Length: 136
Image (cartoon, rainbow, N blue to C red):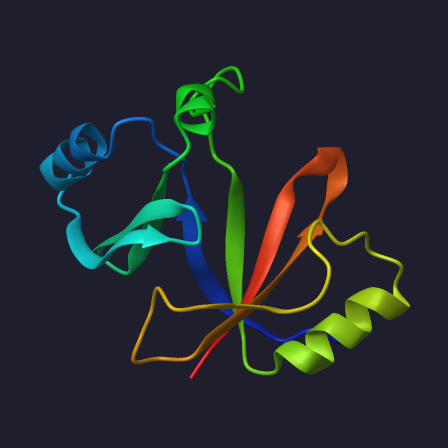
């Protein structure tokens, strides 16, 4: 049994070069907008939900970064995110296990205001990014 207590999947991050097109596509699949934030952390952000599944659609503000969205090969899932109750404990455990961090320290995002959202990002096998999210 693991020392880390995952409560579920927080979201799947899918960078997009065309936010309006992505919103229309996912709406047609039954997703509804939960959060829409412009100009946040270098992106326009949309989080959409359908039947408990949440996708994050960041559209880079930088034109060069935006042009590279969708160019990772077959598909473009940037990371997946897992909900945890205690991010500090999770970070400590991951550090003790020698898991490589994709981003140093704990990040705080305003995307989910009024909720507090703290997160860390690590690398799993094959350089897959895994985010651990604490929301209160």
